[in-house]
Amino acid sequence: MAAGPLSARVAGICTDAAGRVAPGATRDQLLDVQRRLSEPLRVAIAGRLKAGKSTLVNSLIGRRVAQTDVGECTRVVTQFRYGTSDRVDVVRRDGSRASLPLDDAGAIPQRLGVPRHEIAYVDVTLTSDRLRDLTVVDTPGLSSTNQAVSAGTRRFLFNEAPIDDDIDPDSAGALSGAEAIIYVFTQSVREDDVQALESFRSMSSRLSSNPINSVGLFNKVDKLAGAGTDPWGVAAALATDQRRVLRRVVSDVVPVIGLLAETTEAGRLTAADCEALRELARLPEAERLVLLASVDLFTQRECQVSAEQRERLLRLLDLYGIGYAIAALSSRPQLATGELLRMLLQASGIARLRQTLEETFRWRTDAIKAGWALSSLEKIASHAEQPRDREMLRDAIERVLQEPEYHRLRLLEVAQLVTTGSVDLPDQMEGELTRLALSTDPAWILGLPGAPPEHLAQAALQAASRWRAFAVSGASPSQSRVALVAHRGFHLLSQRVRGQAAYS
Image (tube, rainbow, N blue to C red; front, side, top):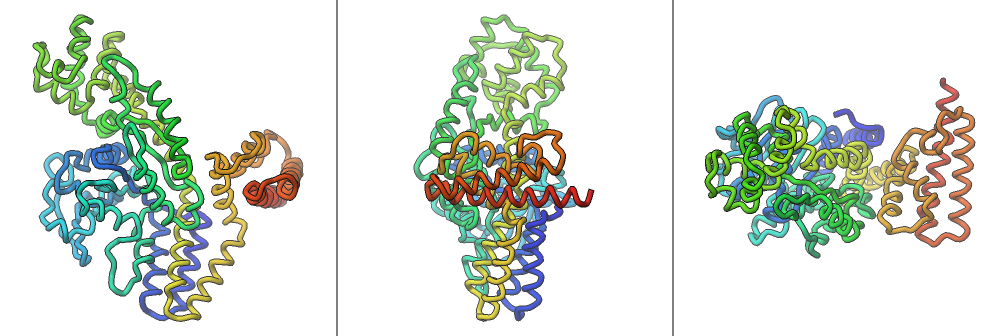
């Protein structure tokens, strides 16, 4: 994946600095940061045991590779990344690797062949195009009753990764940790969920003042519905409540039905499954209602569809998905199988999640990775053995922080503070700041579609003046800090518009 301009600038610092320091731990750490900047964004899937993390991983990858049943392979951290062949490597704490084939179903084997206490993580490479720009890290559970499992997750995510004796723990943790997180929970958010997210956020240094790199996933919302009822109204209300609880640690809360998403995205529903659903849809309405009233009734009641087939449908869709498909087929008997699958995919909520990830993570990748890398460089500088190396790195970091490109990250930070309610602004100013942070289109930012460059440049200067005036008169200290960032952002926007006009 090509690095963005800010990441490329920080990578340049690493290259230059690595050539100026003596061989040893500091140089190795600088080269590791440089390497990570050229890699896809690393997103960790975290949460409690049985929250549906592995199911979500399979949905994002588009293949059922992660095991969802509790077993040996679900108790260790697993990294999924793009490769030219499908491969599973069990990485030991000493750095050695043991390779395994995928099982007959195309999933990670339940038994890894290495004692769990020796395993650092499992490294899975897949020929999935969805992993070209995204590396997904599946974790066992931060609140596991098994302390060894929880500790393994924290080591990977929260600055406690297995390290070489020559590398300090802080730097090693920053180098191996995730850059963004999806935190999965079910109906309620507990205090230790918030604490876990705070822990991740605190490791992000320059991103730590806001939820720029975290999204909450409200999973299994189909469990909110009774027989034949739609859960999404309740799910939307609960998600709104959860956003308020988590507003300082995640950028959004997205409700989803993970099982339905996995089944449709991974192509698990066969022609025989769809035919069984059609047979169920042809039953009298009263019989359908009875079957869908409970899992026991669905699997044990006499029916022309075999009990084995119905049990399979439950594993793939659960009662809500089955009921949704039956209702669609009952109202439209000629519904094509492809259209049914598209409807089930839409009903899962995964499209909303993908849109959120696109808006929250992918387009911010450059800022997130650069912020992570600058944080890592600061830690490397603080632990450098030679004073001249410390000063050289700190000077280079400071120069980057003064560059206009870096200001985009500052804008994202303050916009998050405002949109999450940490800092209050008048609605009009909040909208203006959000547009400035979320777009590079001057006409959209300034609300002047079709305006010529000279008008846009002048409007940007006027906006900069308004924000400056607000910062120095009548604003609270926190509002003033936000306003000064917006002031510089609009000033830089004016300069960019004038520069582009001069070259056009």
